[in-house]
Every structure is written in structure tokens, then in C-alpha cells.
Image (cartoon, rainbow, N blue to C red):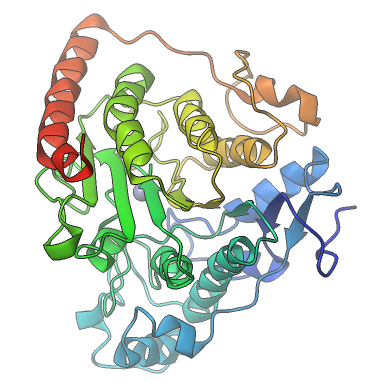
Length: 387
Ligand SMILES: [Zn+2]
């Protein structure tokens, strides 16, 4: 059995934020965004013994209340979203992105989204209060939502709300988005601010939704140089991805010297995802998490995309095992493809992928494109950070 709530006042190293209600609001059938992923992660990490222990624990969220949502979203939008979710027809809905192919109207969409937002806000609060130095909300990462527009399966932007809460608490926030899609809603929220620096590595907008996130989107006003985009070509593999991460993100993070990280851990960049065209193994995102952990700052991690469900669940199990300190070292090992096996903590290495060898022409094309991107980003933003 796994405990369902923390001891009051207990000091947590890591908080896994989840409650059964998050599994009770499915998107419409056949829709690629599967809200049950978080419950599957929870079930697996529980079976591995990674939800219990004196310094790691599951924490139940409460839904974000209307006033909390209004920190980013407009009143008009929150009302229309809530009414549409309850079955009332609102003529303004479609203009707000509701009832589209990407953001269908379904019963419970408001409740689910508000609870996902509450979970990320809970993580932010645990970090702000010093009760946790790592928190993971696998139901979060809804990075495409705008103040008055649903987009890309996202209705309410939990990530923006959490970053705002942390920044409002006086923390300097580094937002790192490794979802295959550009984190456009989060970038837009902080485009003219430097207290939240956003870095997004993603498949290029030339080939993937939302069609933004190019090297020349660098922020405006006070925020110039604090919006950073690393668009990547179709077929990008671990080596090219990690080269971009090390040569762009790591120096910027070092120079920015954040108080806290917010990481969007969308796993739709993994090879085999049905919606995207990157070619990563689990090793790349885990290397990124490990590199971020070396900065020894609190980390609020959230989920995001990931439409190959077994691969996504396995990645988030690995991510949690790293965040709660059960897998700090790179371990090369293999697991039969196709899903998560119940495992014990010291078998985390077996969840890792083998590194595939890309075809030479593909590797040359990808390497040339990634090198060009690295050069452009460094030239566009490094000077704002004294680099
Ligand atoms: Zn995505």
C-alpha cells in the first residue's frame, strides 16, 4: 500500500502529486491525450516502492480556484470554459478554441484542468515553503493554453500559474521545456519578463504544431534574451539533442543562476510517438534531468505531451526515480520494448533504452541543422547573459 497524503509538516525531499480524481476525467474516446497516464505512472512507482519512505511521498492536490486561474486567464474565458464543461452552449466558445479538433468540449474538462493546475500549484507551494526540493505533477504540462484561448489539448495553463506563483514568491525561475512541441503559451506569458527565463527545445515549427519557437523569438523589453528557443529537425537523435542542450541550455542556466527550475517533461520527442518526428530514446531526457539536478536547486517537474503511452509512462517512472533520488547514475541496460514492468528500485537501469545507431545520411543532415541552430541561438541570446 502507498500512503495517500503526507504527514503534516513533514520535510519531503520529493513529492509525487496525484489523486484518483485526476484519472476520472477522460478526454473523448480515440483522442490522443490520455489523462490516465499519470495514474499508470503512480501505479508503477508505487509497485517499485518509490512512493513511500521518510523523504518521498504522495501528495494530493486540490483544484485551483477561480481566483488562482485569473492570475493568467481572463474571467470571460474561465466562465465560458466552466459553462461549456457543464454542458451549456456558449456561442463565444469556438472563438476561444473550444470545440475544435484539438480541444473538444467534454464533460469535466474544466474540473480536470483546474485539478491539474491545482497540482502544479501545490508543487510550487511545497517548494516555496521549503517542504520539498523536488515535486512532480505528471498531470501537468499544459503549456499551449493562452489567457483566453484553448490550444493543443490544453485548456488551462498550469505551468504558467506555477511559474507565476514561484516568481511571486521572489524566486528566479528557469523554465525548461523538453516537450516535442514549442511551449508557446508559457513563452508568451513571460515574453517581456526576465524573472522567468524560458528555454524550449522542440521539433521545429516548420514541421510541427504550433508552428512557433524559432531562434529569433528571444523576448521583448525587459525580457529580451530571456526567451530561448532551440528548434530541432525531423529525426533528431540523442547525440544531436544533447549537444544542443549542452551548448545552449547549460551555459544559459549557469549564467542565469535560477533559484528554482520548472521542467515540462513532455515525452512526445521519444522515437515512436505517433504525433511527432524526433527520434530520442529515454536516455536524452534523463541526461537532461540529471544535468539540471547538478545545479542543486529545487525542481518542479510536470508532465505534458506523450502519445505513445507505454513509452511515456516508462519515461515518467524514470523521471520520478531520479527526482526522488533513486537513480542518480547513468545505467546502460535494456528492456524489452513495449511498456513498463513492475520493478524494484534498484532495477531502474533496466528501464533504460539501448542507444540506436542512426543511418549516416540522416545523422549528417541532422547534425548540420542542429549545428546551425546552436550557432544562431548563441548569437541571438548569449550576449544578454554576459556569455
Ligand atoms: Zn507536445
